[in-house]
Image 1 (tube, helix red, strand yellow):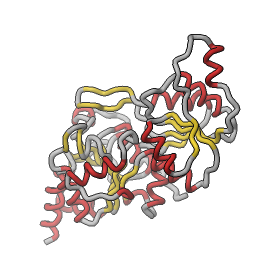
Image 2 (image 1 turned 120 degrees about the horizontal axis):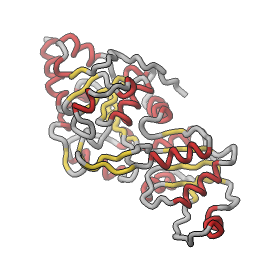
Image 3 (image 1 turned 60 degrees about the horizontal axis):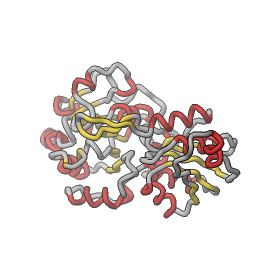
Image 4 (image 1 turned 135 degrees about the horizontal axis):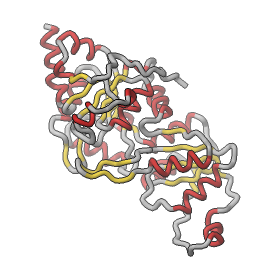
Length: 321
């Protein structure tokens, strides 16, 4: 596998992120020339739940016209990929399936790459499961029952001798203690992999409301199994390996990661050696950004939204005349 650059002192990294529109003409040109690939989040960058973020399509189109290769990366495997593609196209962003990545898809690519054979115990949404099933993988699910409150009853649903070779966990609306117990028992086998998708602790629903994500439950399985999880959602390095391999990217510092969340998007960029840009159109406010002390979640740059790239690239083109 390609090695990710393990550096925390990134390209133009300072403790204070810079607004891309306040850079000098020379700085703008150098920044634009410094990356070939754009990895971007979707929720909070392209749209917020029910509405498109004004100017986001024009911003991404400007980047593509400037010769940048665009890949959208989301931790949302609950939403069908085709639905996501159609929504992007409807909002004037020209994208194909190969340029969208989500945890279920990246896990399939990984399993294919290692030629995985065996039974998978899965805790995830139906759409997530369907992606793995369509790829030909055999899944074990459940238990999907309500039991009497006794250990004897519970054990009858979680203890078995199924030859599970991997436990996969993502967002499951019907997650239960029984499922976690069952997963933990499978993970006690030395040859059973622990594979995770989304690891978000909080999921922003609106500007003012966040709900708990799958992160705490993923952490439970890591701690109780004492196994290091392979994470194929942001901020997982395993995801970065898949992305760089499929896009034939030789060095990580030629990638710009755009996102709206510090913990998922910016930490992903920092840990993998990507350049980073935070947009303030989603789950992070300007005040939150500027109050950060953890260098690992401070971006290189920020913008009000991706729409700022329209003006940014116009300025670069003018300075080149």
